[in-house]
Image (cartoon, rainbow, N blue to C red):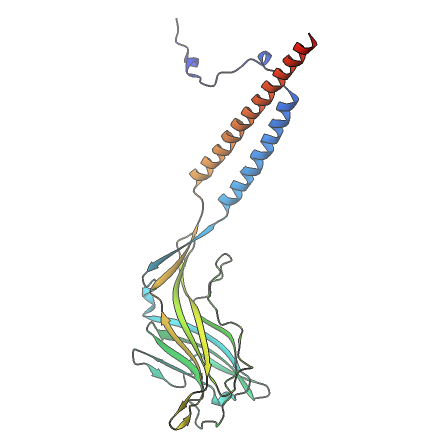
Length: 290
């Protein structure tokens, strides 16, 4: 007797003349196919789209920066002349720079009565401060008005990523126009290193920050201290990393197989239960008729 390879078939076929179509089965089949199509499209959308995973770790991610952080500052002082406005930088490494002018620009406002200061400069990765003041002016005004609006204060590269919502420009729109004109303003910043890695493995480095602020009029034994706008910063040891990822192909295939198999199995059980109940009901009716 020749060996029949068809013995290994675990999916035995039922002849068509032994099957019976029903309206209930047709309805369940159509609903089943529509349900599978809906889940398939949902899984396909998730497979095509990229997800962003974030993690925290302790490290300095941008070791090639030379220990520097780029800063972008844009601030308006509507009641202080441009010749009086200056930027001073100091830190715990001994840096003390008064009247920083590199990569900075002053734009007159209110017919010359005010000033908009825009500056791009670098700071060391140590605690310190930079402040907008009149300290670099040749002649100090009697009552400098430090009311201001902060348009931008950011650190590092700008991240233009749709799904990442961080505090990269937390002071944007800070309005102190109604504050005491002779008051100093302290902004205490906690800078958090941030890394964004795209699908190609390219990394971009930026910094988020949290902020707290206070307003005060300072005095010493010689009288009132000249007010300034202080930005005191410190770096967090924690780094936030955002990584773009896409669902693996094998996981997508597994999900599709689970959807198709599970849906057909549940639909088959449901159809079988309805058909069995229907046949039992017919038998009960025939028994009553007899």
